[in-house]
Image (cartoon, helix red, strand yellow):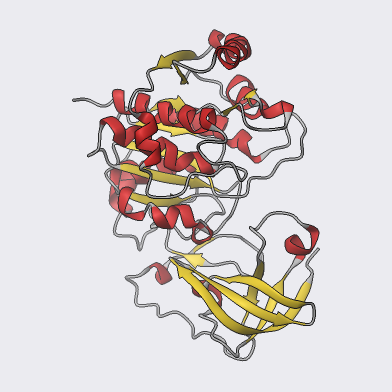
Length: 361
């Protein structure tokens, strides 16, 4: 369960939107720790902090961080509740955990967007790109903006990975390139909060004014190495939600020639399960037109059963390398960059390019 430590903040290493990275002295030696100031207050050197070190000690996810649970000697004040801010909401996320935040849902009675969301019945044929991993987000965005630089793109973050959007330095770096972020389900910390992927997509369209939405989990997906035991199955459900709301689903395929695990080489079993078994309605599945010959053959064979339901679309890649190299954030998946896993990133980029092609000129 939880592995606790107590320590003292030695220094503040760096900050980004919603997060503070710290050096903390503990009985186990110095630890790198992460605090979310909206939950705990802002730690300063000399503050005593309580830490959850479970994932760190076990060598699991969380990016090598201990996580700050509280500043027990300097608790933050209660948030102001003036009836006009996110603190006036009643939407509880990370529910029944010790750090459950209470937020203003985009469609709550106190929300300025309540009327628009209550009246919305669909997303007006909006293209929605669904992806397994958070690392696909900047590559998909690069693909959209390669052809339609003025397109408004919203990120709808699901709760299969990190729950706080603040954990993502990628998302912080893309702030000026996105129309906004909607955190859905148990995830929180976006520009808007939604209860479900459905309301998240409605908010992306009718509040953020998105032309294209990207649906993907936060960083740090969960997987057990079994056919069904991975958090990315939710992208198949996002395809279903998109069609239910009158959108146009575009499936970003997880294709790799750099992953050392057989189940993720070629087309990952994650994509084959999510689109082949979880998605119950048709989607477009873009594939780069110029994959290496052996990889292209493997991809074609793997996708053949999916063609019964979905449309596999070959998409030209000219100009996409330049768009990916110009990304405002570092491209990285499982520690591999663009050069180490080119197929992965260009496959995400062609999904973005295809979504852009569906927009009216």
